[in-house]
Image (tube, rainbow, N blue to C red):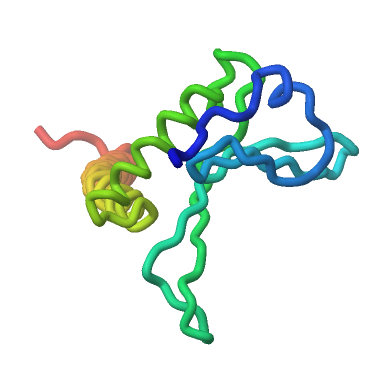
Length: 146
């Protein structure tokens, strides 16, 4: 029997206020948690089993956060469609033998290396700018030699 997908209706996703996890199918969950201000926060999780073993030798489940639920399409958060697409890509990674969490961490590390190189360049140029300002300030009080 095939797995059922897209079990949560848009109305349910939008209106549910009871804390808990709600399965959308295929390992995708809507997580609803109570917030400090009395409301709720909603986010998407992808849950899967992967070769990590517990102390008893049983495989453990892993959870990958996909992001906060979008309440409107322009708020920059994750819509239901985007969450379903990300879960689909994660399932495809799993079929190919790739752990989606480790894959995401590798991408972040690679992009972090790029950003750290950029920031290093920025630091060296800003430090040389700072040195040139200090030099001008030191020589500002002196008369130019002719």
